[in-house]
Length: 124
Length: 171
Image (tube, rainbow over all chains, first blue to last red):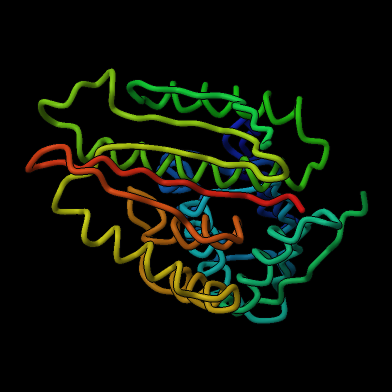
């Protein structure tokens, strides 16, 4: 199985998903007009990944901001990761010190997703 | 006297590329006037939500007679310590009731209730190609931290013009 990698653009985040190490990264902005179309290949990749995941999956999310259709897609991504054995998946949610909107977004996911989400402050 | 400053205004048709350009210009303007990066991010993300909402809606609505040149209006301004985003677009007469109901409901909620509502909507339902399944308006209200002001002006039997004003306070 190949790793999943996409460069960042002005509207879409960098996606770097390493199958072997289980290190996942999403960073930048996520504001595509059609989020499902953008994320569909990643959904499919994850459907495969969860069948034979790495011992540890660590997912770093460092988003500047995202639109609401992307937030729905994030839920879709997390739902897939929920299928992996508990305790082997951690999501690191990064937000800038004074960015209450991104902090709240992380807490929103924390509330509804059944995977540990660790909140990480980036100091300015 | 109030000091107000129009940062950008637009009236015309809308397309994917145009939306990208409008957002790029808005970002440039905000970089020039606003020091605080969190405020810039807040305004920008609300702007994205509003314009993408209009754009998705536009694809639905504008099939016939309406003049494309006249199809949306958009204004970004700073009035003293507040930023205002004012938009206008046509909506089908049949959609007015639901849109009004949604905004009125969002306006009736406290910040805490908005948060609950957002989480509820995020948790249920699947993604539609059109976007966030009703999340947009809740998100805009939640981030702006102000009531949404709106009005519908009847254009003809089939369409109304929908004006929305979103205020973002910086202090």
